[in-house]
Length: 82
Image (cartoon, rainbow, N blue to C red):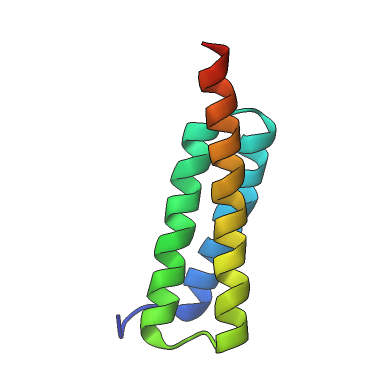
């Protein structure tokens, strides 16, 4: 954890969020979910390093949760179509 580049991890988090949103717009829930998992991993790295404060921690968790919910909603909609 000590070698983690905080700024790189933050950029990766933002990039994965952006990609996940685009994939969701295209109806691609599986790759969108993979990006959400990577967001979660980035968050965990930052949290383990103590690189996020209490308020920012809640915001980041909310961003991951919001996209995870959208992925789940898209997935359940696709399953109902089958």
